[in-house]
Each structure stands twice: as structure tokens, then as C-alpha cells.
Image (tube, rainbow, N blue to C red):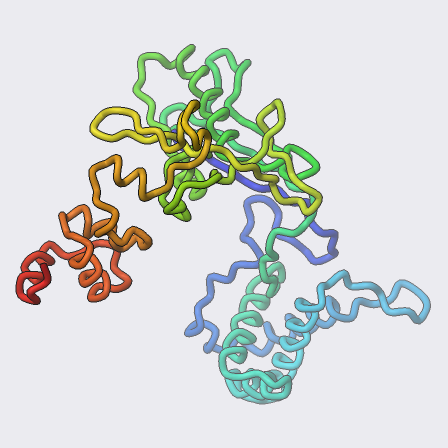
Length: 350
């Protein structure tokens, strides 16, 4: 069972011809540079140049004002280069020489000479093949479609067709918010309800292709990053949510955050509180790394706990001076080699 996600942005209005469904995408050229080196026939080049000029300079319906082409500035510039190039080729210049002469005239180099040949060859083959660069996602209204698909059953639907796992999500801070890990969990629960109802005889495996989900932890999960050594008021940043569980964003559009207590840990199978309990003189304060390590049996007076690269050293049983030596030698490494004890003996580090 795979999760499929697509973003749909409002297209920009343009009079540039686009490929219809089922046809080739006009922004993708299958021709390689060695194909582009082969010159076309002069007749095909003349026909392409004529159509290219009509695209760049469409005939006026009436009056003296030029007709609006609807071409973007980048596309118009590339088409103009193709026009100069094909004109030079028809006038007798060699195919490669005409391309190099064209790009030198506009201040470009050999790479652009190859691209002009590729664009022109593609346009000669099919007039829908325009040198259009795919545009990045803009600021327009987006619609995210999220669904599960199976090789055996297709898109996940109930057997009677009344229930669907598909979710249409209007992404944006003033709309449905952002598709976070919580939405992914709710989507999976929705899919599970359909599977439990109509597909109980199968074993289902959910596969998610979402990098942010792979890194998700509980908001209050234990983390040694920026954990203070001493006792003080301290907590971890957690996003603020409304009653429906959606993120609350500030005036800058970014999710607002609040300080929450880090979750307690475990040591030797028993819970270990990271904050002083009620009744203690420091009730509610974070104990600090030094106290937490002391409760776990470490002598913090001999430990240098301010760096992550010491953690593997302590795990291998090294003391403070040995950890400092190993961390200096293997600076930038998070894991020490298995031969570290032998190296310490050879270096007389005790």
C-alpha cells in the first residue's frame, strides 16, 4: 500500500501551445547532443523558421499595434536565438558553426550552442516542442491530493464505493494549514478503517514517501541537544495547536511555539524523572544533565559531557581523559573504531 501525493497549482494563462493529454510534454526533449549535431534538411529548416517567425511576430488583425504573443520573456529570448540560428543555417552556414555564431553574438558559450541546436531540432520535429523550462511552484492557490494505492486493488476504496481514502487538502496558512505528521496519521487511520471493514483477509503494509515523517518524534521526546548541564527552568519547543489539532501560525506565517516539559526517561527498567517533583525545594525545575547522569551512576566530575562525540566513548567504557583524547584524535567522527582501546593502551592513556 503506497501513499501518493500530488500538488496542483493554478496554471498561468498563456497562448503558448501545450501538449494535449496523452501527447509528449513540450518541456522535455528526448534528443541528445549527438542527435542535435546532425543538420536537418534545408526545406524542413525553412518551414520551421517560417512558423517560428509567426510565433514570435504574429500577424496583426488590424491597425498598427503588434499582436500580443503571450510568450514569457525567457521563452521569447530562446525562440529569438533559434530564429537567428535557423536563418544563418539557411543562408549557407554549417549547422554547428551557425549555432556557435549565434550564441557568440548574444554573449554565450559552447554549452548554449548545443542547447540551441537541441531546441531547434526538437522544434523542427514537432512544433509543440518549445524550449520551456518547468517553473517552480508559485504562490498561487494549491490543492494537494493524498491517497493510497495498491498493486492488487488500485486506489483504496470500500467495496461498495461509498468510502474513499483520498484527501483533498488546501495547503496554506489561511486555508487548511500544513500537511504535518498529524494529518498523515489521521489519513492512515482513515485508510485502516476501510481495510478493517472490507479487506480483513489480507496483510497490508503502508509505505510512506515523506521525508519529514521519517524524522518526526513526539514534541516532548527526549533529546540531549541543548540540554543544560545545571538545574534551571528549561523546556523544549513545541508547536501550538487549536482545538482541532491544527497548527496556529503567528503574524509572520510561521507556526507559533511554546515551551513544554521534556518527557521523563528510563534507567534500568524504571522511570527516571528529569524534573524535580513536588515537595522538593527546586520543584518543577529541570534537574540538569549532571544530576541525570549522576543518578545513572556516572561520576560527572570526570566526564566531559558537553559534546556529542563523547557519547560513544562513554558507551565503550572510556573515562574522561580517554574520551577527551579519542574525541580529539577522531574529531568529526560520531562513532569511534573498535580498536580504540588498543590505541589508548599504545598511547599510554589511562
